[in-house]
Length: 457
Image 1 (tube, rainbow, N blue to C red):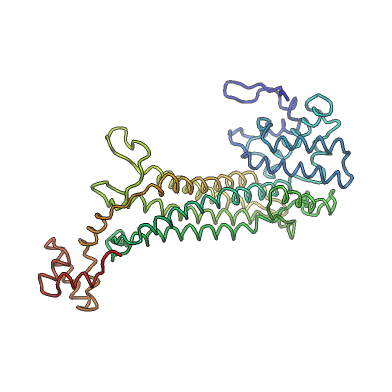
Image 2: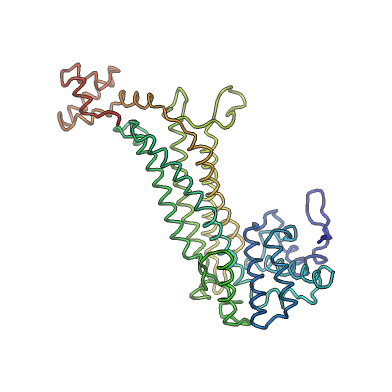
């Protein structure tokens, strides 16, 4: 299929939209602000999938002629495969219901179906974008349906496996370094000793809990608004339509979607998307904690903590030779910040569900899908390009433990808090270690001190 599409120097379509995409798409383009942002292909693929199975079900229900149903399903299948991606020209900032994108989809599929049947692109005969491609549907129910399908598909097929990869990488380091004693830190100050394995095991647990949170929040996305049409009442569709389409979607994707228990709620509110966004924000905060800790632990290499070394990925400075920066942790921090910002946008947009329709659905879809992608890519990059290549500096960690004034804490049960504090102050003022002070003051021998504070496992 050769499209009659011309583009200017910036790659923008210059052919009149109604000559190729359809009159409603042309009007929709005129009513956008042309931000250059578009709904991601994952969303469009899910919307096309709905159109494909809707055509099949409408044929089964004897509402579509077999020739028309076959042409619509085949054309929608091409969209699913990404072969007509350039035909989706509507800007992100459009009708809040997503009608512009829905009609763009209807008109592209109709145009391609008509080409299949007549050899001519566009037109409304024999396949009409509204009467045939959109049969039994409304933008108001298919847009939130496509949002849930694309979001949950991305979560289950991409996000969760990548979080699991990160969790595994952290757990492997925790096991490897379970014997390395290091100094703990609270308030960015020296605290009592712990093990490097414990630190990384805590990170692994954060990721495991993140996975549990995402799975829990996913349940709301399984409910689909399809079948509610304009306001949730199901006007102009058949009761059998939505369940049959959802069954085909589940078979195709090997997922477990279900018809919304209350379609009025499913169309008037975007609470499931808001809940998932809030969960992703929590995951982003967890990733920020992990990434920031790695930066601190690897700070140096000689004038910082330097307890671990991150794998060098690129020269870190355009002016300082040999300087290597923690690139991947910084990437994760920036991505996480974007996810947190996206959640603020989604929270505000979720409030715009007046009566029977939310009117900021494209914005919710764009930001939620971006957040899912950012979390997944961040987790994978942190695991594969950072955590797996981290090396531990055993000697430096041991040295920090030996020098720490926090070792005076071990003396409290034997000497009392005040006496232990005096010894700590004495060590600080003289520059000596706690070990040296207790030996010097004949409180205990070096061997007794080792027995008291313990040694590496």
